[in-house]
Image (cartoon, rainbow, N blue to C red; front, top):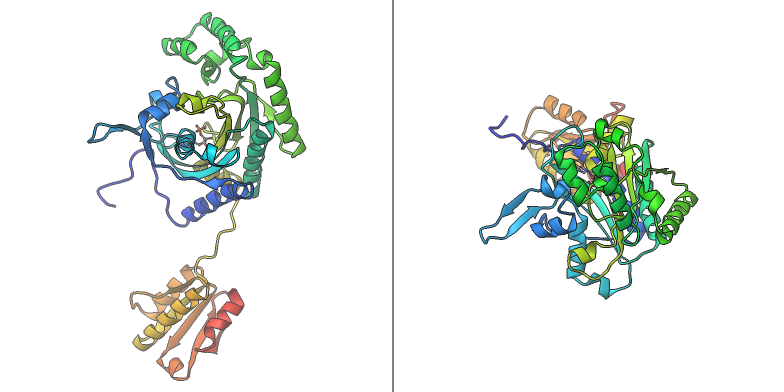
Length: 420
Ligand code: AMP
């Protein structure tokens, strides 16, 4: 133990678990690459205002959970709590929406920071893979993103992910709905903070998890019954396209999500094996966000999937991902002269594309063979001075225990033949 440990709400990713995390990120990204999404990377921090305007002044993320700091130069910055506002900011800054055709399709992978109350599946530093399709209003684009996420979960072998779907309406129909919801909510017996929320973002009250609140919400007006014709048609089309693609979903009229910028299509992927923090991904359409951060109208849709929770979901389902080979060959020298020779062989094997490792530290043969077994290697190459004088090394199969001499000159090719 050192004097220090990782800050509360964070954890270190260490081998062997870290290999699973890399494999998850890769699996989430693969369908995006095949669908024409380009990789984008933005800074880990941004001007605070990007998030307060973009994510919304009334959200928990902005009011309670943002890590903010003032630089020596006096700028107010925040560690990014989510990806969408940054990606849109970067696309607008680089004029990607003017450079080529629309939509601009981007994907990202990175760390996000929220000062939340830590619990299983909820961390202050967590990892997301996200995708955004900017500048196009087309139900097929909403459907594309949802299908890509569903395919990513499936490719990981996860069977327990459910898709919840809703429409939040648009600037035509939401204002009237918002007003009628406010009228309903003002008549309820709610605490002061929730009453304040009614005035700023009443839809969020529907998302309140407390039972006494949920009980009072029975009979609340629902967006579904207030959608304008255009929104209704749009939503119906998204549903048809999902059904045609074999992606099952549940209509969830209470689904509003914690960010202010969503319009029309809203969705969340949940996994029932995770306890309270069941959301493994979510997203939706955000047609007004570009204008909220000073850009032109740019109707867009996107999602973010939570890597940490997907790893937990894999564990809950007992899914073992096929991971890239660790060490395939382990070299064990017997004596000093053999050390240089086998070290050279390890480099040669690596350059031939094999995963090879070496008994470092000049320990005895017993310790070296133990290290070879622990490495998970299929073969050990063992050689002493006498072997080398005869121009051979001993190739030991660590599964069967069989051992045979192979010429020093031919060993690399022989191993590539057996393992490559
Ligand atoms: P959100 O940006 O809140 O929609 O989050 C998208 C996804 O990121 C969620 O569905 C979670 O899987 C994941 N996520 C959000 N917040 C956290 C957190 N504090 N810890 C771990 N995962 C998170």
